[in-house]
Image (cartoon, rainbow, N blue to C red):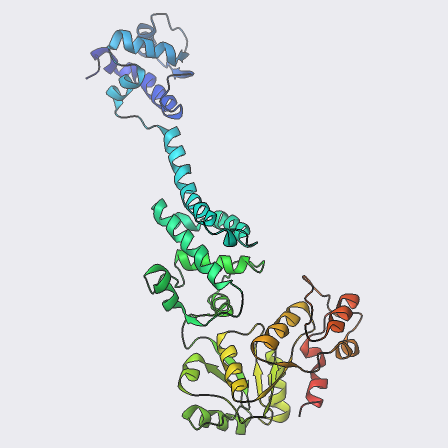
Length: 411
């Protein structure tokens, strides 16, 4: 119990001001406090406390002096003990802030420790931009336990490093991957911290922002070999007439007869092969408008597969089945740097042959007022002269701009 005089209500302003300053000071009795003395009773009580007259409505009190008074008059261990005896425990806000800062840094310290044991990952150029984005996003604040946050951050780095490794990704289900790395088949689902962290890393690896829509997230997963499910990802096709007999082959043949495009899913491909008779020429295009135009002019007479940009897993599976069956895959895409990157990938991964994508084709189509080439140049591995012409001209040519030429030269 505090001394009876310390419980005088007139001294309440002193203890309130001392409490506030001590909590800000890390419980150290240093500095001064300012106490309002609005009436005679308060001034009288403060005068008795300090041992000197208080004549004004406000008085400054040195905390070291108040600490000495507490030791001498109250018989306590000092002003901290006295203020706690009068009003309850003090909070060390300095220590709390330090602890909170340490807790915020703990996950990153855990990751740095992991990276020290995995120097090949630490050297990857995506790591630091990814971490900077994670800090800005506040994602880890959703994990209340710092140790859990560190574990999730390390898991995300490990998963991203695996998906960003060299070579074409080996397709896997997202739930299978999640169960393997986190012991929880839903740990990478939309809305999870781990899933969001991995997607941020995959986006950072190509200098992109984190995907904001479900479709963008699914496309990013599929770009790196992870299939969120078997029905949402599709491949746009036209005129495919599979050689094998199946319900899918029958459906595709009917669509080809009517000249109707068909979206194939992983569900379809798991149940039937779409390989067409060996030697069939298949147009592989980048933009859906090209497939649509073929359907308008030729119906289903010319087989077409559209990648819709960088091919996803379903498209890659369709192309793989077609190639295995002996089809000749002729690819045409945009004459811009992303289009060249897609073509390079399809040449290697799907055995596509660039079609009407030579330097001569580009020079015949490019316009001085065409769209500017943006981004870092990508060398066309099938025709170095094309890359030189594109760099020299600095203009892009999109598939839609040469649509009539493509249609005129279809087989």
